Figure: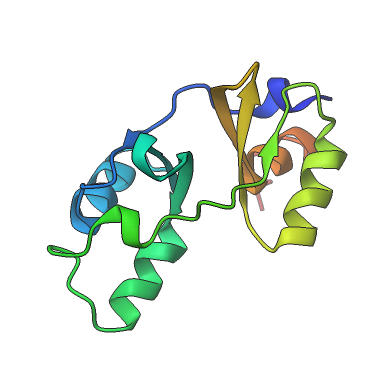
Length: 131
């Protein structure tokens, strides 16, 4: 199975000036763990994850004043839609992260998460057996 079969194509994008609270509210409303940060002034495409927000709050920073640009990962590892899920999982394990931005011809095509990969590899949950 390929990344294109597992990735989410509905992508939350935020700008570098969004506050962490704004980003967190958008992520929470969509029940996702990462947002793509588009910042043409800082090199283009970054990613902000729930862990980035948690780390900031854990340091006592104010989510109403902290901006996404200060917490965005900019050395992003990108996946191609033609990668296998094994390649994506290997990249995640090697890099210690749970999301990959998927690029197709230089454009953001989606995000694939560990959860997306697990959904493809694990059978659907069956109803609990009656006792």
